[in-house]
Length: 392
Image 1 (cartoon, rainbow, N blue to C red):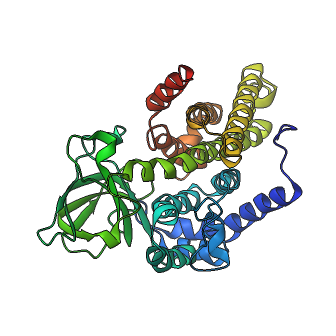
Image 2 (image 1 turned 90 degrees about the horizontal axis):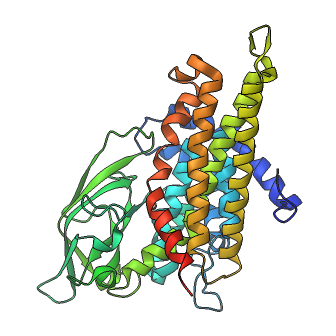
Image 3 (image 1 turned 135 degrees about the horizontal axis):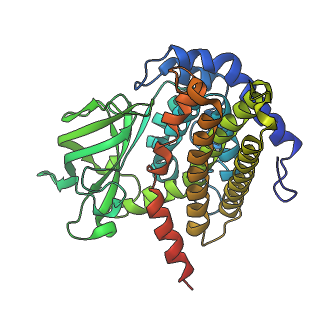
């Protein structure tokens, strides 16, 4: 369902249907064959072959190195298109959705701020699904408080670069990614103004890591930096401006986290409507029980409200509204909290069958929890919203 304001165009609707069809026919089997908690390279390669990864980077479809636009920035995906892509994939395969999203999250700092050489080296491989990207921001002592990160970038003795020393944690695709967008402190005691961003290939000496065994099925790990060398050629943007690099990427992706959540919630609702329509109990079918029908109605209403908030925030980003932080925070907050509610309600409607390993809702129940934490926990989103109320 879409409101009149956010009704999809025929082309958008056809694209969403094609994504779901490709996911059902080709991506679901590859996702099922992958090892939980590990990067699924065959899945990424298939998404590259179907052109789904290219949709993350529209300018890459024509040339390997996108040309800057009138404002001096390389073309990026429309936020609404990104939301439609993520929502459509999430309805069918959360594994495929997350693999695609992580490619975008790890690569966009390069697309938005990298040099021509950096873009030319890595973007075609990412689009083809042959290179895996990682976004290395979080640390043990500064999860959601990204401005307080402490990974140290110490000037090298030769004066032409730095060495990175410290640790990153909760990093998606770590330690299997081929390169990372890494955020490190180049100026001490400067908060967000003393952070720089670097493109760090995985084969740099001193870079190590390990997998973390998490409840979420996608790969998450720890990275360790033991005097990892980087030079000015590895910078993403300017020295001490790395926090802006991170926020620019997160501003684009935050509404689409909400779209991921909406897709999961829609999958849970669809399963519940189908199940309640055929499950016989108490002398009839479940859907005829008022308690069940009211629960389904509440689920559907919250999903539609979340979807419209996500589309609205994405449209605000695409039309260049200056104050989008609050809108994006509302979209992520409401959509992820809604998805948690809907999946839990769907489990309740299904009963014990939904708790069996391998059931769709058992999978969604594990998957739905993490988006309320990553890319800014719900409490952080409420703080952003509250702060925006008093601006201007």
